[in-house]
Length: 304
Image (cartoon, rainbow, N blue to C red; front, side, top):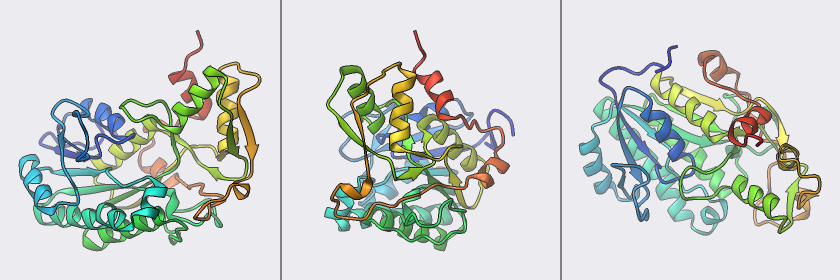
């Protein structure tokens, strides 16, 4: 697979979720590809996330059709979602509209118009009891968010051939306007506070935004159908993530406290281990980067 993956010279790519946290990384990677790109932002985006991006309310089917007719995509990368766990719990109707109904609508448009659909999903479709999770593992979500994403996966897969790309915990500095948990940790480390509790008993296979974006785009460019897992090469807890970040920055006494996920009251149970088995993606896309946390930190936070 070359530098431009499996793109065809005539490809027109539609990206949803341009104003999300992953969106700017996807845009940056797609700008390096030989495609015509149309980006849809969320309806509340005050300024375009990138030049030419347009706000589209995915919960408005007529607006989606109008914007689709302008974009006329050959490939759709559907990265938009209602991804805030507590918002999905408080507003299940909105979670259903964005994560399920809109996904089904895009899948139907893609099927009828001959476009390939690739949707991003999450490791949170699992319950955390049987890691590492292979692509054929049965979803058992514990949260309203995970449930809506699992339903969105089914809606897409039942409509027609598509790519369902489950992403592990994402980390890294923000490119857009929305700070991430990683940014919050960095700010706490650099200012000396406030103190943060980090779970020692919740494991993921974290992957940085840039690597995840490249993985999603490589799979989409190849029209790789079915379910794919895109996670990092290491199984880490949030405590380990924070501690390694502090070590990288040379901070001996970070404002982090080790805590159990069971010690913090929550309206929904927290899965213990959502580690993903990503070997199918690695076999199909061996040239996609797959850096360790240490390599990502050296790249994104070089020591002066």
